[in-house]
Amino acid sequence: MGHNKMINIHNKKLVIIIASFLMIFGLVSVIYVLISNQSSKNDPTKDPSYTLTYVDPGSGETVITTPNKTPENMGGFNITMLGFSKLTSDYGMTFDQVKDLQSDFSDYSKSQKTPISEISITLNSITTTIDQNTGDVIDNFIVTINRSSTLKARVTYFGIDNPTLKLYNSKTNSLLFTSK
Image (cartoon, rainbow, N blue to C red; front, side, top):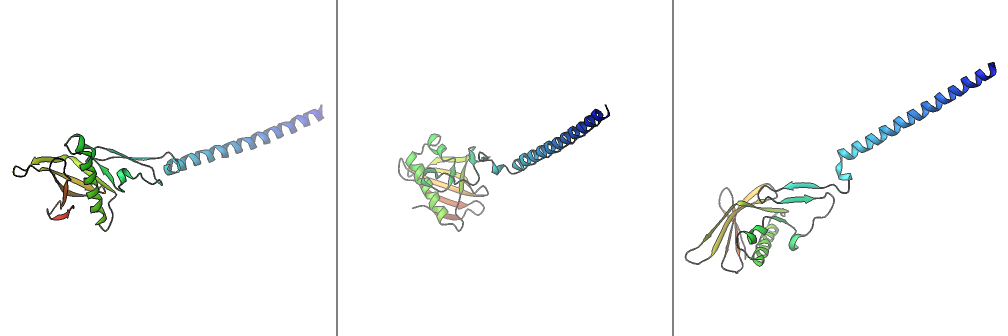
């Protein structure tokens, strides 16, 4: 009987050692998983589906970007242009006139030391008048450049003619750019 007692004590010690080892291994595994998940939560760009969402206050449009991916080249321009679709749907410009206007903004960007990456029309700033002498339609509005600086824009066109864009300094009203 004494010998059986010794085997049982030895088996109990072995079970306790194995159980302790498994508990420590399990605890280390859980800590590793938690740390790994926490680090990916702290750096969501490691998630390939991660995107940044921005609602532009001027146009009301949502801009969705995915870090480390090249943005789409919208309409052949390397500039994100927000609010321009409203010029056709709500203000009577033709699609071709809007494309010409976007091209004019692209030309303005090329004339700058730092190229423009985003232009947003402040939709609630748009005013439309008709010149009584020439019949030209004149749209005035504010544009925000790269989410920081603002310019005053004046677009003049007649019927389906190409528009002329003039950009002014918001503070001094000095002319900065005239298209064509």
